Length: 441
Ligand code: GLN
Image (tube, rainbow, N blue to C red; front, side, top):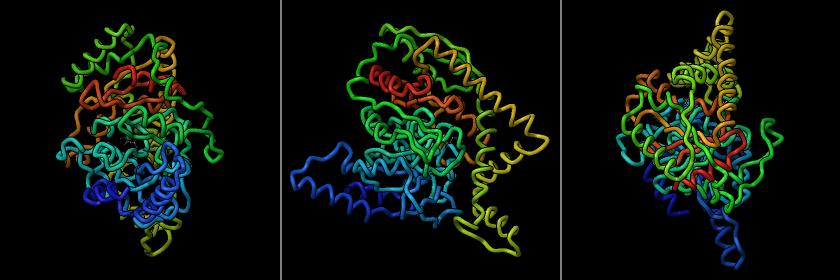
């Protein structure tokens, strides 16, 4: 634990200013004492992990990498984090990310851009950039990211590690700061399928504090080594034939498809919605939900407050001064699509499109067991560009957001293409995703 804490201190751009040293070291001592007394320890006991700074951990600051919450102290602990603490894992860092999860590069943050683990001139990916980089660099054994539209899978891909977005509702969102509640998922990032399995098992389960959760069976180690039930795999023809895809990502992906065929699995080409429809549906809903979720952040109950002439002015100044440009863009956009005169044409239409997307997935999974896709159409951009061209940044999420709208389990594996391969199965079939990841190795 001490070694990992020291490594983290030299790399401040992956971290936020909540220092967990005292907590981490005292927890580590307890494990040491247990070992010294000859007691057996559990699978996760003493294992150092990181937490994207959007999870409540009582007594520590939870900033969401935003000025508005710079000094905000968590009043309670998120269910997922509590379960990891109960299993003996040791939180050693709160991790830098895009403010409130708004971004795809981890540059929309008050703590400075997260640098890519493989090439520091490139972005770390987002929004859980700090979490993916910390795992890639071995500062943490695993990290807990949050994935609303790709924020675990995309940075995992950019930094060549594993990242899982479980089925929506498998892990409680209680204590995860809400971005877009209908797609927000708690997701582990780690260096192996086995580590993902272990952490997923610990965090999963029904929680009375999140009514969207469901009970799921534990996934055992043995079962994910047998993929014999997987007979067919599909991929979206239009993703791969699009003009927007990087040529290397495309040729690597097609090589992976050939490899899978050679292993005796049937591969089917599938039809799907065009990228611009997926991106606009996702961003309409995500912005609408975030405008609503963030309306509570006006300085009266949480965070930095700037006083002005009267209460109304104080709200306005607090929000204008403390939210980033990108976050404000989303709040304004979200309120617009929810307002009279626009909601029928834009918001309600997006809800209908989301249903159509989910139905498309349901039909696909009658035909294939797994859907494969590159994680992104493009390679990680250089630091300094993404926030200048938000539209291009949104389009880079083209391959991740559809699976979020479908609430499906989907895993990034660091192989297949430069930015990773996404393995997706039908709702609640997270186990099948892990099986296929092992089978591909
Ligand atoms: N890049 C996407 C967005 O900005 C996804 C972010 C996320 O999953 N938190 O909305």
